[in-house]
Image 1 (tube, helix red, strand yellow):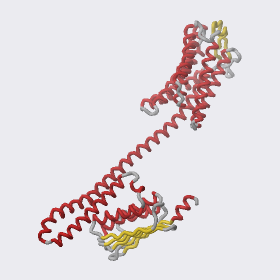
Image 2 (tube, one colour; image 1 turned 180 degrees about the horizontal axis):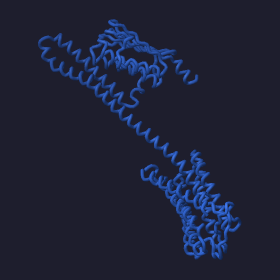
Image 3 (cartoon, one colour; image 1 turned 90 degrees about the vertical axis):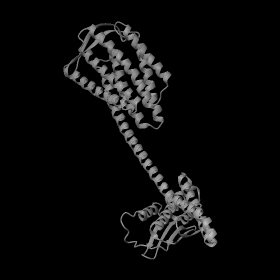
Image 4 (cartoon, helix red, strand yellow; image 1 turned 135 degrees about the vertical axis):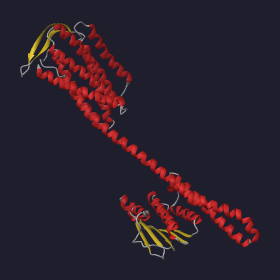
Length: 458
């Protein structure tokens, strides 16, 4: 019986490897309960296959009866384990029903241990042999079936109904691939188990096949669970990476806001405090100069308030999308005027309330970037910001009387213009920049309403 023993040994080795692998996965807290249950199922399969190998080596009735009782007990333990695995895998876990089904197998297990010859036979008179095509022989019992053997059919059929109904429930939840994979492995397992019952009843004479049904379930479900695990790990890594990027973005935004507070509001308030402290003394000596300082104080205070409103708007998740585009740009230019010694002329014409949030955000960010560049590099004293819209398009124009630059020779590392172009392209807008040394800079951003209509299929 070398060939059968070799095949069964390979089957036991495969089940042992898979079982230990999934128990290791469970210990790493990756879908712990699912892989723990499946690991136990695999280890019970190993015990069952090893018992089958001993059964095929039995030479007398007494040895056969003892091994047969052990085999039946392992089969009932396997039935309990597979029910829990299916319940966890399909997420259909009516605990009371599962415990009732388990109790049927526990009763079978008790009957099997109490009966002298086990639950299947009340008496075994002798062992006969059947010869396989390649010359090997295996023992089969001859005897009287135990009347309580029908209780095993009740337990088996009840569990079959439960596991297939669980697959149906999983299929209805749109987990079709998972349900069909489990159903296929269960069909093979149930088919081999029913074949062995026919062998026990003496209807057919053949080798037992349940152990191969166990192996098919182990292999099929292990491959599927491993695939699901790899996908879950990749998703987990993506979530971790997304969370890391989110934290970086939050930190960058905090740093930007802190920098803006320092560059604008903090410095403005320092200037306000300095002027306010000097005004009483200046007023005594020269009221006209003090009056100018008072006007400057009012301008700085209004600018600081506008800057604070801008920062508070950006801190709120919906701050930039709740207000109309024209109001956002007016608030932005007012803040810039207060924080820098600039004369900003803002013109808003047309109705911009129907502009989408995405378009509104792009126009706002480009205006913000352009004004920041003027303050840092433009050396301008006057800036013009105009926003115009009609039923066809929205046009934003920003121009200054600063030092300008050669737009064809932008130094490396200055990403502001490139970022503005990318923002414009993201909504299908046209971005044009014109600048010459000593002649200032002009930016035109135009977005056609037709882009929105084409995108929406109108």
